[in-house]
Image (cartoon, rainbow, N blue to C red; front, top):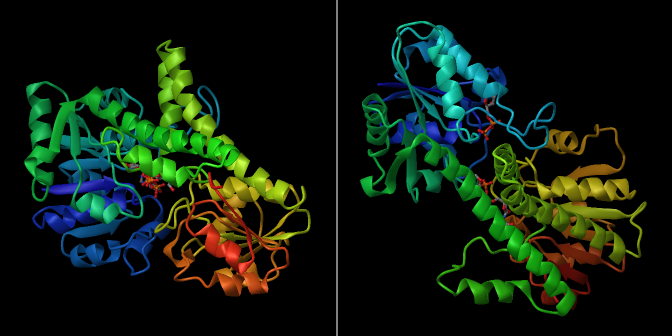
Length: 454
Ligand code: UDX
Ligand code: ADP
């Protein structure tokens, strides 16, 4: 059996590496139109940073895992084609700011239709609006050829930073297909691939639409928990309660559970906001405006949290950061990834730059070029400098802000005495991740602020 995966990004790369590692008899090729990305997958400097990924890639690469820019040839050879291309939020036209931009998915479908000369199973892995499978099928079936295509939905639930563990041991694998005999046969074929390492009872099969909607719903529920605890964090700051204590207390209720209750400067990543806006668009499309408003408020609360954090910095620094140096520790949207998509850091930094602040940014994995690009400035901009560690970033700074919960920023790995000593006084500390103990920082001399902390 041959698998071709279109899209060598954060989803396609790790997922295919895992399938290739576990299914030695299947030839897996990941294709991408971006030659630099494909070239990087063939080196030890992978384009995606993910703990444990390089080891898995090295085990399978050249054996049954390949990377190629020859998209047409690899699609043609394949029995199963995974679509793992990006589906950003539309920035123009109908649905701008909410609907998913499906141009890359549609291009894939057209490409598959035009080059195929045999029957194939097409698997949507990118998160897509409900009923996208129908559009894909229409494009595939409109070629007039006698080839038969079965479209399956197999959403990916991996989280970045823990992708390899999530793929090794998924809570569940979800596969949606048509209820026809051919549809069910295709579902079974994909079930057999995952069953090489995932227990059968963890492989769920549903109809196409349930599968597509489950992915949007899962992300909406997860993001909703974060917005809920972040909303409470604002109330904690007003009342003197401690949000971590509240989260712990409510998480002990087995009906609520302890996970995903860490208040923060706001959720980021390529999925949460995009998928909720997608859901909102879908609800409005079906005339369900109250449902749409309900979910949209999760994103609004997240925007509020990010803005609240930058405003707090400005207010605390005597209502002005103009000309002041602020060290930004962490730029990725979460630890253990070099991904910055929708990172709260981008919003906070932009706010502070607008206020005239000078930012000294340190992130252990994000490249300098990526930071400049995210901030929409070029490297000649004197308001921003990039640093190789927290000490250099904090040198002569007026304030320090932790925006990503990297382990290297914890008290046992970063010497905050040293950070404090090099700063302008009074020295302010803003912990957007509640990573360090504020009392320890206060003893050193910092005026320290956390999220939802007294
Ligand atoms: C998410 C989903 O978890 C995953 O199942 C889906 O496939 C893709 O979207 P990801 O975006 O990679 O994964 O990371 P996740 O760990 O969910 O974190 C998302 C954001 O929420 C990060 O910015 C993170 O820092 C933030 N977060 C998470 C919190 O602020 N508090 C929490 O308690 C958990
Ligand atoms: P994700 O997080 O969903 O994996 P990425 O942006 O990291 O998203 O990866 C998507 C990849 O898909 C990109 O590398 C992009 O070049 C690739 N891609 C998009 N459209 C096509 C296409 N029609 N053919 C080949 N590759 C494509």
